[in-house]
Amino acid sequence: MTSPIQFRSFNQKYECNDDGNFSYSSTEQKRIETMLFENYNSLVLEPFESTGDADLSELTILRQKHIAYLLRYLKNCPSSYATLDASRSWMCYWAVNALKILDADIPAETVDNIIAFLKSCEHPKGGYGGGPGQLAHLAPTYAAVMCLVSFQKEEALKSINKETLFNFLKTCKHESGGFYMHEGGEIDMRSAYCALATCEVVGLPLEEISGGVAEWIISCQSYEGGFGGEPYTEAHGGYTFCAVASLVLLNRFRLADLESLLRWATRRQMRYEGGFQGRTNKLVDGCYSFWQGAIFPLLDGEMEREGKSWEKGLFEARMLEEYILIGCQSVHGGFRDKPDKPVDLYHTCYVLSGLSVAQKYSLARDGNIVGGDVNMLVEINPVFNVTVASERFAKEYFTKH
Image 1 (cartoon, rainbow, N blue to C red):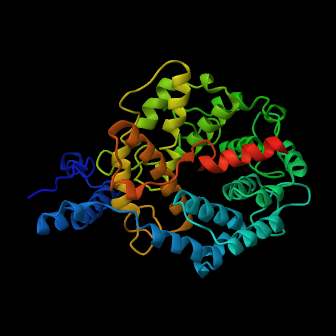
Image 2 (image 1 turned 60 degrees about the vertical axis):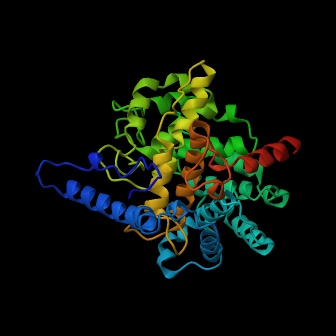
Image 3 (image 1 turned 90 degrees about the horizontal axis):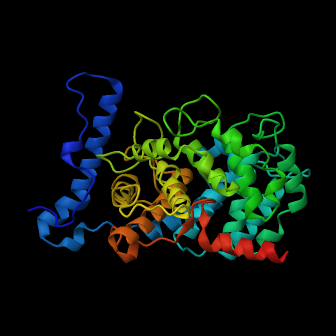
């Protein structure tokens, strides 16, 4: 007896075939495929084959366990997180954004504590550091602002000093068109995206920092079609998302080579696993559910403006849902890179963001999502990676103020 659920992932004909030529990468690929099939067998095939009850082979998001995990880590992280002292602003964003996507209630005391903590990370000259007293840096500035936006509360948005923030963004601008990550720091695709997204979401005048940015971004598009962190570097999922989202914000997407970008992005979805790899010839990783998956709704929007559309969608959204629920979800709460990895706040955030994107695609294409309505997540705005409601609340607030 076989499961009545038509899974598109974990198809034997797409298993890795190295023709008997041993290599470390092919061995790792086979190991991951084996782990995923074991999970698929235990979670889907065996429950149905032993009982004949199709409901037992449905995959369910363990919503309450994920919420408990996130709220627990917002209060007290284990010692293993000590190395992330310069990323405490990020930890707040990862957890809060994930909770909002899960449609969870965040206790008022927790909200107040995070607002106060992020205020202590705000640099006197503008921008935010990764922790109190740390150097202002574009990455934690983006994280802190998006965390505050995610709350959908006026007191959170009031805490942002827009004047000093804008001064910081302007000081990070480089004559090349890119942005320094911090004073004297590196210039790469992350900094361009963090500066533009932060500027736009709080209603600051984007045109004052956008000169030459689109041209610098285009110089980072590689021969593969994706974007690297800087000119003449390898195409990478995270940098490609930052590039595409930035071009959308600038309304300059037409500068990109769309055909080669589509070819590169669509080929990053793994045929067996259903999830995405971040670069050519790499392993699947749950975080690219967002970094790669969110590229497609952005491309959809740009193509629709030009009267183009793809009825079947640009990627296999259902396969991505299957990978996430089979390979990334922990029964104890939280999400991970792949089955043998530990859960963490970073992957929990970006896996859920990617799953939200995939669900919207699946609804449009198939009329349903994996596991049914009980699994429905809150829709995100893929440009900023906050919920649609959070972005709208911020826009309304900053328009009034």
